Image 1 (tube, rainbow, N blue to C red):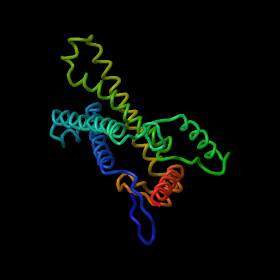
Image 2 (cartoon, one colour):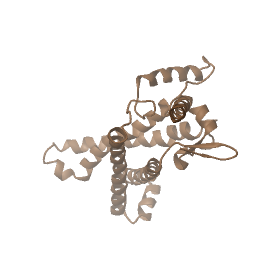
Image 3 (cartoon, one colour):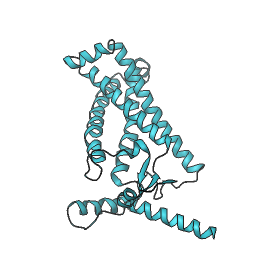
Image 4 (cartoon, rainbow, N blue to C red):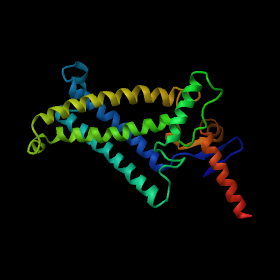
Length: 241
């Protein structure tokens, strides 16, 4: 659970699977964004240069679809992990350590807004995941399903035209493009600002890359999780005596 040194106590916050999935999602998201917008804005000189560097429009289409498949495989991996967590590890999907939203998150959100507006002395006692971390996760997780559906329509238009009117492909194209803009704006601006530009973590929060968090950070950023961890350790010590 932890590595202890002379200076500090380090806790493992993310396992290898979650760190690898995040890294793959990050690079695949960048790849699908660059290739997608280079096709959408093919008349722009910079996009034309990018297409040329990748070997032409056919190569760009291939790379775009490759990155998209990798992204959705990461979504499937998260689903399988959730099933493993629930049915093998017997974890509680609505417990304090879960990434799922709970009614309590509404209270955390209200208390946090009060803190940011100077109406309270301190932030809420966040548990393992804050309300904005959950929002960050679910916007990508749910958005990928919608992007995958519209993307498959555009990938195989002849096939789907057998079952749906042709204008469904046009609708899919509009939705796919608009969702892509929203996703890129959210991830590159809001996610970056909230995740890495907060005063307490600036110039970056590297926990998702290292998997480790210090005791001081745990107590400050996730006091609810810290309290549960201590209660669990004390309970284990009592049973051992």
